Length: 435
View 1 (cartoon, helix red, strand yellow):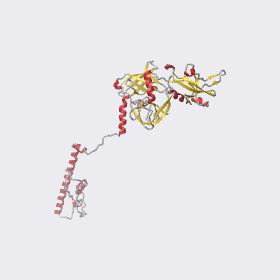
View 2: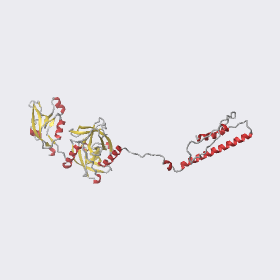
View 3: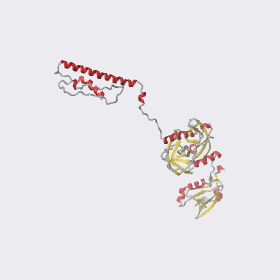
View 4: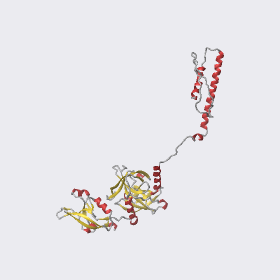
């Protein structure tokens, strides 16, 4: 309002209307703001635009009086203008610290769940490693032998003795292995042992104790669908990446990438798992290990929201055997069986025995394999329908039952032989290369 009055006053000497002299009361402007030391608080009565217009019909004495009024009003306006400009300039050149005290800048605050996630990542990142799989290749032109990376994956520190746990398919076919920690230090790794059937491998590195921070081991038996999970790994070579999600399903079954043998009780999650995440840990909200990220279901090979992790309860028993013995002692029947589709075409349910070597457990017990008679006709062997009273409908059922047994256990195998059933006792033995 004050600025408007100033402009009106300054412009009034240049606005002339000699033919009209309306008699209007003078306008009085009063500041509505509170008194301040920056501006005068007295009331200013400035002449109206119309009161400053010259009247040609008046005598010279009245004309001189009007001129004096104009000069006085212009001087007052000019004084106010200079004062305002001086004060404005002083605000720019002086310290604005006192003024900035009135500007409230809220500090960056994280929600409680965000703080928990940040803390979980910071505490567990030193336990996660980056594994590089190197293979020997011969140059086609120079015939020089070179070591080139053929794959990469993730892993985590199991104990302070330098044992690193990862997936078997991460290290498969490697001539040399490199393990990189969070601080970018790299060490050579040696294979302690592996279990192809469950896709688990154990490596060992000679690293200082202060770099070996074992990851906390949790329990997977009491997991619930819907609880939060966190995956740390190295997708596409981007080291130490955190993704979050929930448990989408439990007790899933996938096949081992190496042998095709089924892996039971697998955890399904929608946490992003991409190539390079294999072998990395799946953690619960407390930062405890509940699984090893091992596979995804995706036509394109990238994350589609369906990832699978081997439960830690399965991993713990395998790792303990690999650390102690360098191998996993798993019982077998000593048979080769037909694909499930072939048995279904016969209209029966069970596992058809194709071969039972005489020096194997099944051969010693008297199970009959499939063979041809003297006329070349195919004679079906025994069809296993149950083991220890547990029904067997396909190869996965048989593997699942054997996983619950130990070497040396005596099991009762029920078979369909011809048109009748028989029960045959079999003593389980380890695989030939484990004896």
